[in-house]
Length: 377
Image (tube, rainbow, N blue to C red; front, side):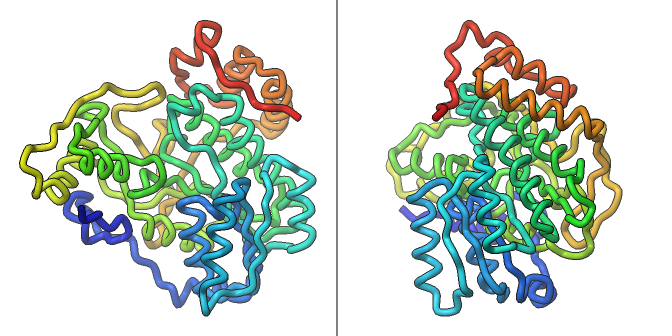
């Protein structure tokens, strides 16, 4: 079976109904060349693609951080096999471990930090809310504190459209991470959060799932015939991240220009047309219903947000914030809450920080469901 190239916009352009995101790499090289750059989640789908792209922009040194030994091994090996690879250091470490992160920053003094480490799978995180908050929100808080202490020039975090008016704990945890950055732990750091839509081909996304289902002869499972999502290629996601480092942007939440959201069913039918033509029997589509934490239609902006400025393919979001003292108190209390696995308190604190969060029934009634606990040492 021929696999649709997830990085090739030409394979998806007619479906996405917009122009591809293309940036001026010569200009970006002037920004990134000679810089010490650190990437968290460097072995993940976007993290590894970003790392390879950064290598082509002549950084002085790349520091690759990941909590997964296998993922880190793979990106380290890929970098060692490149003839043009810049100097790099691969570090096995968790962003929630403040001592480890502080040691990494003191040793390497990164000027630019790309924060790609996150838990992102919505239904899985609904059953693991403590891990979602601890990793996505508290891990970002730890990273931001260390970056501020080491006088990092800018920290660019990958966020998600699911952070806009969140209905899942994953989305809410990323919204809280945005609030952490926008609170600006230090004026000398440019804090940036880039909201992305669904990255075509990424681990656990619909495109590889549909490809597997089609290869087996189906059925192809679509949650709802009216469900819509924003999509972009892996290459476009990387281009946006590189562009976010531009001096055009100070501390801000950024969103790319992604046109209109696309029906998930259209993605399925697009792939069926290309991948199942040789099959004797048609591959059926089955509607399974929205999953816990899913929206019918995703949005890049919350209802209270608006666009204040644009540059190239990125737009600056005018978003709300919460008082700094309340934010820091909430984060401290969430740390204790996650250690104690207190589901009721977790929900209370998340709603205090993010009033627009609409929790799922699974989180509203945690005592009727088994929630996974965060392992403690």
